[in-house]
Image 1 (cartoon, rainbow, N blue to C red):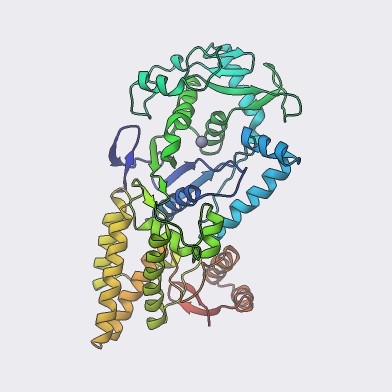
Image 2: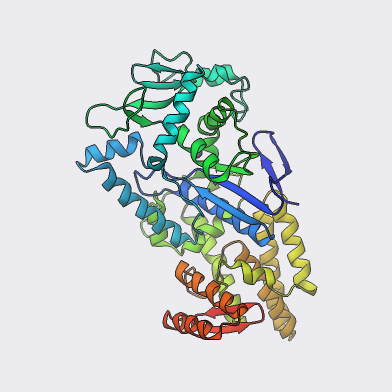
Length: 463
Ligand SMILES: [Zn+2]
């Protein structure tokens, strides 16, 4: 049984699924107005690891992450740079996926864009106005939070302190400082969509409610995001679902902050304020390992020393891969990892790691177990127990694979096309379509891989 901290209940509890064997998860994605930053890298890695772990545990995962492609910040950049909003969105969405691919974050199953859901949002806002849970002001439509009796649940703070916090910015016509914009009337030259309550654009909080319910359905399992989204964004999503009489997420999960240490950044490592810069300067696997070595709910410190530390640890992993000639795990890493032969020390290791991961994704202890096993494998090999050492090393590699980290001497994460080819080849082999399997092997070889047939499927490695 997988247990996770639920922000709504304030406790670690069983992840109770809507349908047994299936996890539906919604992760609030980026606003594409700028280069991705370190916080983006962390939340995508945290939830990528969760998704991979669920899959490794035999669950089938439906993973949705939205792209916010209409927003004040996008409009501001377009106007500052005298270009269209569309040009800004296209550029920064491409930067986003480029960074995700380098991080080895698997693509979501669905990536809804806010601008594709404006009609549905207009409909929802109109229904709120009809039922008097929203009201019109001179600059747009606002949601009346007093219409939701338990408003503030996710914030976990008294309403009064939230109200004081929200008072700073404001529109005098708002009935409460906590009321939030559902719709913003368009000023001249701003992008606009028609609506019965005035041409304009949707507010940010509405897109996620509409898109998550459309793609995952009511009572979906898991709503995730960074801690900074807990309030007001997630609370405002939840309030709208309540007001619409829809059962929303069963479970809320939030990951901790990224601190950029006070340590002076050295010129050679650079001052990585953007994820893009960090990925240019380091092995992208280092950030995943750094994220794995902290609990997802704790803050992490990203600075040259913690990155260098992760890179040294990667060296140890890569040396293990070299010593035992371990294959690269591809094909989502998971099919291979889950069908690996677990026996003796490997089985014990697997069980310890699984117990830790299933207890609120305790990646730091799981990774510590894997590094201990790595040392044991080296000792066993030094003492001449080559076969059991190799089995243990393979298990370490398989379990890191389940967490999305490939052990590979001096190499990079297996790219998406390669992963797809491996999966297609495995499927062809299962279907005994040997001609197709051979063609796919040739394609992999052309991409520079050595291809071997393992008991559990296609194994690939670099020459
Ligand atoms: Zn959201």
